[in-house]
Amino acid sequence: MVRVLLDTNTCIEIVRGRRQSITARIQQVGLDALSICSVVWAELLVGAHLSARGYEKEHARIIRFLALPQFPFDQKAAEHYARIRSHLQPLGQLIGERDMQIAAIARSRDLILVTHNTNELSRVPNLRIEDWEQS
Image 1 (spheres, rainbow, N blue to C red):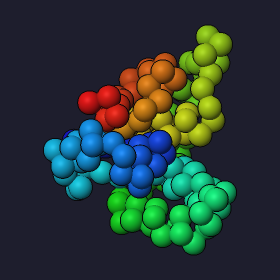
Image 2: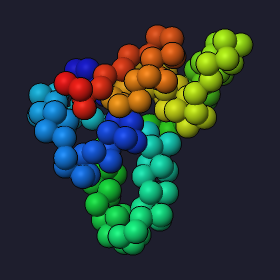
Image 3: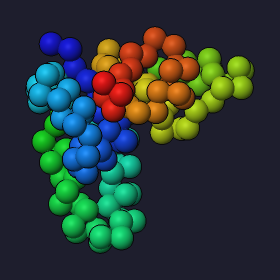
Image 4: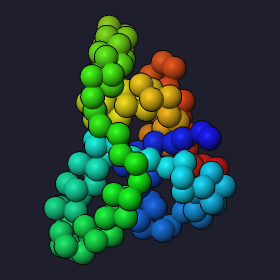
């Protein structure tokens, strides 16, 4: 089975339920293929804390992502992060720190990263990405 790692922007669209293309892709790949990482979970929590709706309401909306397998930023991911950054920095093409961490987690576990941020993340060598908002 091909596993996918959901980026923060994809998780937000899932919570909002506005993208039929994302719902269709989830049905196609199956819930068992989905995962998140600790960096995405942290970003979702920050969003809940900053939400105009209030933390409790927003947290209740995102809590379902805890049921998905969650990958940490560990030593293996750190090695991939170092390779990604040392490749992009000399080219003057750095992307955000958390994006590099998420990419490193996906790459270190051979996961497809599902993101709408393809413009920046496509700079990461050997990272498989899909944009389910464009499907």
